Amino acid sequence: MKRVGASLGAVALSATLAWAQEHGAEGAEGAAQGGHAEKSLLAEHDAIYYSLIGTLVGIGIILFCKTRITTLSLRSPSRGQLLIEQAVASMQHFCKGAIGAGGEKFTAFVGTLFAYVLCSNLCGVLPFYINLPAHASMPMSLTPAPSANLSMTLALGIIVFFVFNIVGIKANGAGPYFKHFAGPIWWLAWLIFPIEIIGVLVRPLSLGMRLFGNVFGEETVIAFLVGTSMATFIVPLHTPMLALGVFGSVIQAGVFAILTCSYIALAIGDHGHDEHAHEAAHAH
Image (cartoon, rainbow, N blue to C red; front, side, top):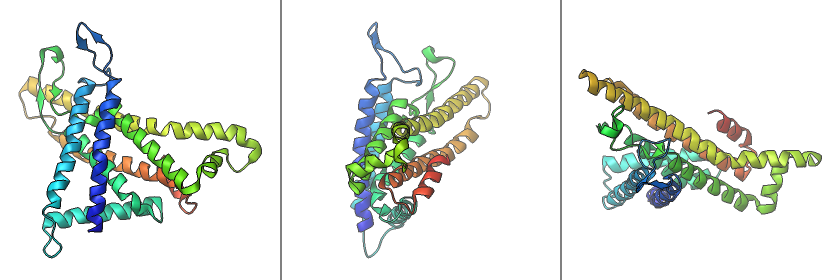
């Protein structure tokens, strides 16, 4: 039941992610011209459409977990329940190994990020496309991946940014936490401190740009292959890419979770895991 409780706590953040995406997307819509909102230069749909899909993904995760809660059983667990419990246990083991002792308490947060990013990525793999006169050169996806929009991925990165900084301040105290940015040599603090601060500030941008670039590029390739298949009326050329897209969706969600754990470990300052966290943060 403890693992199930962790899953419920993780789901509570899904609504926050959807809310952050929707509000973060408002700035990307652009000014209105002739009564029509401009679309982002880095998206095939209006930013609000990505926000809508992202909100539906969050609601879907919440409804799925609420439905599964009503069927839980201690004496005769179903195969689905055993699978979910195994997934939660694996995520706990993953967080403890990546963050260090006590890392399992971040299972809810990291697990929610992984589930949300994975489901968002998989939306773009669904083969629902339509040809519109305004986009004759390339078909448009009816279920685009929310993570293919920069406003959504940056919103996720900002959430991670606030979480690992709050965790670091709580674990070390505000003074020691900001003091460690100055480095071990006091007479180089004037140089090291601004460099370290800039490095921390760009982390949400790095998280957002990495996820956006990979998913957006994948969706662009799939859309191009779908358009080619529609034009030639032959065997769907995009089928292999869809399979590769599923694999890539899992990888991108895993990378996002790994980097989140690495940033939390660095903020906590567990010296036994500092080197491991640095290597994980830069390996990708």
